[in-house]
Amino acid sequence: MIMMFMMSIIIILISNIMMFISMILSKKSFMDREKNSPFECGFDPKSMARIPFSLHFFLITMIFLIFDIEIALIFPIIQLFMISNFLIWTKSTIFFIFILLIGLYHEWNQNMLNWTI
Image 1 (spheres, one colour):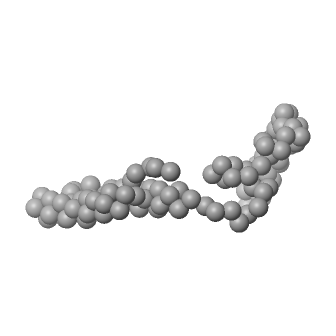
Image 2 (cartoon, rainbow, N blue to C red):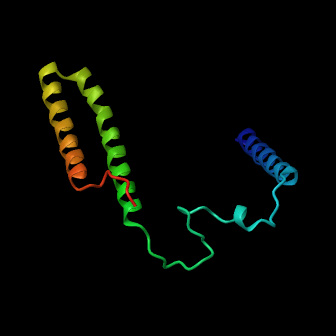
């Protein structure tokens, strides 16, 4: 128990020393306003917060998130292939990809995939 306590003290001490050294050696200057401000989709964070936001950016973000979740849902299909027979796996995979294609067709039909400003 004492050994574990000593090791944790040593780890905390080493990490604090490394952070202190990196803070001393860093060449960060605090004089530049642009470098210190966060980048938020091209907006100046120091200006008015209630400016109109393009709905197209929001739609593209939602499409990305939806397709990202769909990719995460496709991964278990590979595991399903290992534990089930080929016919059940084929039917479920075709059904799932058919649902994804219907969603893609709907987004294409609503012109959500066109990047025009």
